[in-house]
Length: 594
Image (tube, rainbow, N blue to C red; front, side):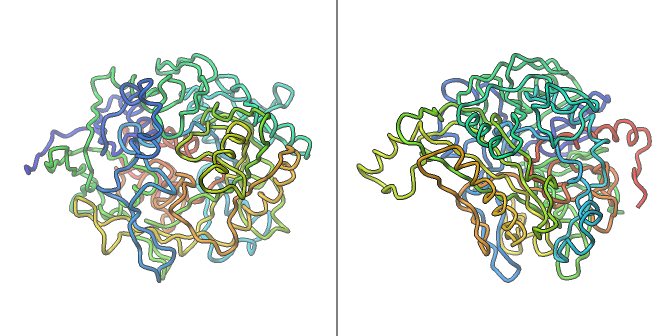
């Protein structure tokens, strides 16, 4: 195919999910000519979310319409460096998005901030519990930024998404009688919309949690509770609890997504261009390797295209920024033997456990009703909201009862001991489909010296480039943490008074299993920080080595956190965009001295 050289632009953005869309909006507002490159197809509420075709579980959740095409490119996995890595060949444990909107189109809508101490996890634990509390194998480090610096951006994101929720503390004052999350940090403003209505199973969870002395609260949700228009003039309609959130494009314009909340505004400006089906091969560097000249990609017709640009924004899904930096020769690859280098280091996932309750006929919990981000949560065991001193582990996690709508194909829960088929199975389905509740422990996952990313020496994608290789497994610290919280939550489960309880939680020694779905929340690989020896990007998400390259997304997290990453990733994108607009464009240079 032909080699094509395009006219230079001011900025090129690689990946058009949440953070790519935010960067595009901010940079076009600054007057830059911006081109966004998305490797997948064009997607939008219409036609991808058009009713009734969008309510098709077979197409969307079983055949993975909105997810990455594993036949074109994937990743490889091994549990340790002594194992042989093999490709992740079909969607299982996690679901990376593909197409305009990325994972931001198919996410559930759980919209969280972050606990301030998680932004300074290493220093916080050392100051509170002593330097020896953190295991030597655990490579914790601070973000290099404070909650106070990020707070205005958290507030802006909530208004951009139309987040529904109940604040606890606004400008230092407890509001609404203190019915919000008592563990949340101070806020500059309330949520833009009131919280969603509480589903019946979540109400039962709330009552039981209070009986057990815990502090339940209504989850913040990017599924709007009322009609809403955001700062960009983008409109949303109130959620109707159809239950088709995670894995789907919302047909009702009720779930926040880049496609609903940002793209309509970008379509109105002449200095923005979105190109789909463009697979970026690398970020191009000049002879010094200290300046990016643009990117090279393969278009839908198989042409190799060079797009010159003065500024490059890497905004791919989670771990893919690490692969892009490795393929482009940006930064020093992490070497687990010496501990040197940072690209590929500090990769984190999350630990999940679930507690399911079966009531039998007549309870009528109606769990086909649901919304992706709506429910009741508690933070008593998240971050450092409890005393870790005598427990001997680092990390924590929120717990939530979040009825999302049980679907018939992806699995209807039945009590332990139910036959796998036949009359007994059918009877259990009939008795339990609308009489079941569940809640989850959404635990953090720490970072370790022997969990890392590099380029696979054997497997390549459809463009002949090495796949990204994961060397990753769960460690005893994280399993002890999630088991501790799950055990504490058994009291709540019993207080909900079901006929039987079914608990799924990892055992010490369990390995990461890529087959059953867990969560899509990967982080790390291009960690941010204040020390260039241990981070890939500085506090403004600017590459230490190539100053006109910035990286955004959860890949910049230097540690794992308890909450879902979207809220923090999007706030960091606005933080980085502000630095670009107010500092970098006036004087293109490294914004932090090495």
